[in-house]
Length: 246
Picture 1 (cartoon, helix red, strand yellow):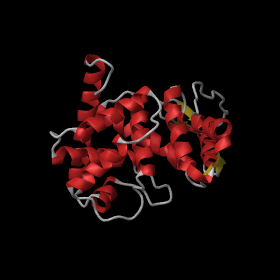
Picture 2 (tube, one colour):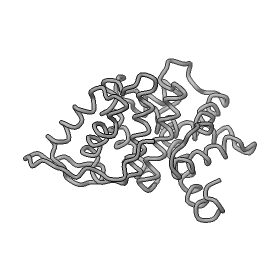
Picture 3 (tube, helix red, strand yellow):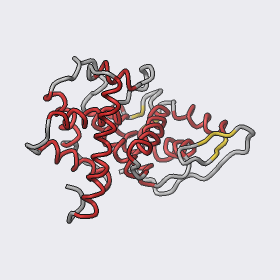
Picture 4 (tube, rainbow, N blue to C red):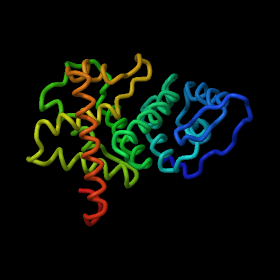
């Protein structure tokens, strides 16, 4: 397992400043250099010493658990090829940063849990081949299929990741879960985890129309509804149920 409890703290003094995930100003030149390096192919054996320090430059001071989430997805992107392909690294880090900020706005989820949810959904997307061409998913079977990929993921590292997986599995297994709930959860999971670095920008409209065959407004409203419901259930179960989430 790749673990990264400590973040790199080195900076370079330049005139231009960039704002990172944490809101802390960082030199724009240093950040862009790190992103350029992340876009190069990276062997699995170099993720610890090459990939992660550059991700830390881009994202700034966040917890080791957050960096672990990125490292696990980086390993999944390498897959059987033995290296993270060209163009995947920077896009992966940007995806975590963008979705984390959006999750904070939508559901006020703590940062470690945001990164864990993004990690879980991205791992499911890679495992389920969500970026491959397929007919529009507008049936209950297709909505359940999305939850099923997440619920049956193996080797989920970390408590936060496993908590999210168990919540999704609870809904997936329950005979009381309605078709609309499966739909909303599918919207939320695909939005979190759809990652295609070589495609044009992945917008709400694209996912709504090309993946689910629905209007952007419905897609946004229902996935935010699902995220808030899952976040509330996660908080409740952590505080009230023995052993944590369902």
